[in-house]
Length: 101
Length: 103
View 1 (cartoon, rainbow over the protein chains, first blue to last red):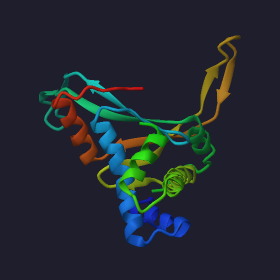
View 2: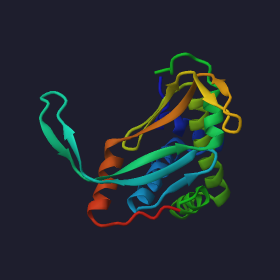
View 3: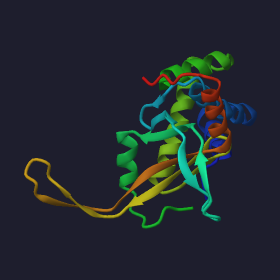
View 4: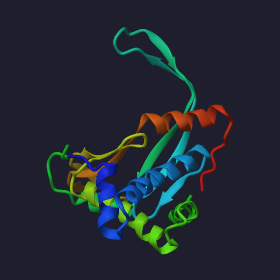
């Protein structure tokens, strides 16, 4: 089972006493503000969690893996995530052999 | 945008909540996300992206001062895959000529 927006809204309902509709809207707004900042070209830094950065990639040669045909990969802007030290340490300690799906 | 700027923006748009409420809500969300990953659970946010763990096998590193080999155990690292909507919106911003401003 994966953590979803519905699970996060449930936490806000339980911990803050937001009603279910407010909790759902808040979770949506939280991710929307991060998308908006990235759209404005801003890096997003969430202390205790990690940073979302932007990278502009130049066009580069690519290949259709099925047909082997050469097709250029167009220039694009991509979002990269860099976990903070605290999150890395917490995750490193995860002893399971396989990440849970 | 830092976490405190994110809190300010959300507080402006949710006038029924106090700044303290929004601060607590944002901390609750990031803490729950970190906790899920720390327990090996994936995060799937439609339109934003998914977070999962990638395994890094054990390897032999080196003490940079002495050059001595140091065995490093295997570990998990967080990985983020942007979702379709986020990928498209960010890429459209580039096409529209929005510059990146990395702090």
